[in-house]
Amino acid sequence: MAEVMERQKLVEALKAMGQLLRRHAVETTTLAGSGHPTTCLSASDIVATLFFTSFRYDVSNPENPLNDRFVLSKGHAAPLLYAVWAEAGAFPVEHLKTLRRIDSELEGHPTPRFKWAEVATGSLGQGLSIANGMALAAKMDNLPYRVYALLGDGEVAEGGVWEAIAFASYYKLDNLTAIVDVNRLGQSAPTMLQHDLETYARRFEAFGWHSIIVDGHDVEQLMDAFEKAKNVKGKPTVILAKTIKGKGVSFLEDKEGWHGRPLPKDLAEKALAELALTDEQIALARSLKVRSPEGAVAFAANPQPPVADPEFPRYELGQQVATREAYGDGLVALGKVNPNIVALDGDVKNSTFSEKFMAAFPDRFVECFIAEQNMIGTAVGLATRGKIPFASSFACFLMRAYDFIRMAGIGMANIKLCGSHAGVSIGEDGPSQMGLEDIAAMRAIPGSVVLYPCDAVSTVKLVAEMAKYRGIAYLRTTRPKTPVIYSNEEEFPIGGCKVLRSSPNDVATIVAAGITVFEALKAYDVLANEGIKIRIIDLYSVKPIDETTLIRCALETNRTIITVEDHYPEGGIGDAVAAAVSKEGIKVHKLAVNDLPRSGKPEELMDMFGISARHIVETVKKLSC
Image 1 (cartoon, helix red, strand yellow):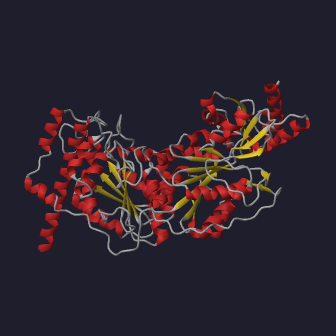
Image 2 (image 1 turned 90 degrees about the vertical axis):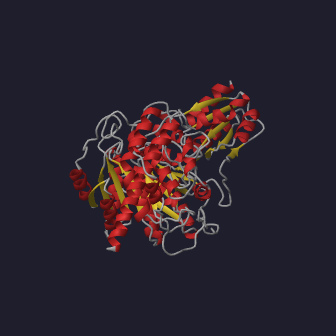
């Protein structure tokens, strides 16, 4: 009888907490004058029950590696996220009033400025992939924490969600529980399946998940579902919770047209009257505590073990090595000295040469198959748990996951990306396989680093620099083999460049990177035979860029810079260089792929589209006349 009474008291406390969270959502969004209260109202009972029954978390120390992890994939429910953490004791409840203010970390959608969020969410369909990475890290490290991801039913239409669902099943992530808040209403219309939970269940089960259907406002059903999920072995679990959007407020419940609309003050007062709690109910709700994880392990913020200097392979001058192959060599060298290095690939590991890492460290290699969105999201999740993930694919296929990369930038994620098969120099495969937009895209990510090596030595050294950099770093690699031009002792700091040819009589500076470095060197030889001197710069770091060297060289060469790149002109190397030297009034002449390419041999394509040595020679002569 005592146990029954105790459970009944817990149930009443959880119901009260759900109402309290609803009150916070209404109050804070009305005060802010913007936000999404109705989606918070539907999920309040789910979040209250999870946090105060099943969730294990040391609230005072978010970095504890034994903490369970929670990802709010439906990021527009941020007021609910902040409210539950406040009620859990993470920060004073009064601080909730700063929601959406410019001086507050309680942003409209979560970012890691709010340290209990860990990742940026709000672009729907990404949270489950991130949760995959967190759950996978637990498996790698043999840690007992569980991962929970709360999704909205509308976002389950996203293809990236189904990539994540397939991945979680394949890797048997039984430490992962997804909760879908099936509240029936999207932003502008009802969702495709509305309240057809049986169809949702069949779809998840077809992908190899265990599904549990519950009333999302029945805390006892929710308690039992979370407990059952912990006991499922060999597969992930989804809790499909039938809810009512706007729950608890009669004039909002299951009504269209209220998504993303805060209540005006008069309606907020009516809503709060319907959500009223007695002092005793509030005290009962606040008697709930988030339980800390059991056991203890050593931990530190942003765990990074001591890293010895990697021993890179040694290459011979003139040796023909594709930079994509050297990328694999660099990964292996890093993997030997840093156990946090993890590699992910999208079924092109024999082209990106991440297969070298897989052969050396199979337990730290993650095959993501042809699902680039989930690959990036998984990398973000791994990074939250102290891993240094290197995710690779063709440069053009990474663009399929660009919104995930964009959100990783907003979340300040420590992930490393490699895009191979860049430009028309890949040859006969044709334009669908040619990454020609990637430099522009990656330069646009806040805090990103964009690197483009031309030979094997610079590649392996830059892979090591990427691992040291905290943030998003992108490496662009080339399909054809290129000769080694640097000694094995050469260093390549991020933000630098190399002046390969120089004289006091140079008439122009040629700025190239990757494959076009060799076209520039060919042009140098042709012009030198005609008595014309040019300066050659290998711009291996496109972002950040060596502004000082570029300006100095331009001023020493008739204020003339010619950029040559295997990329479309918009947003590429030419634009990066022009931005760097513009304050000195230096004009940049851009050679880039100015038309839609086609199949052909690499040398034919580079000449056809204006980035071969011949075009450099012609441009120099034209400008120096």
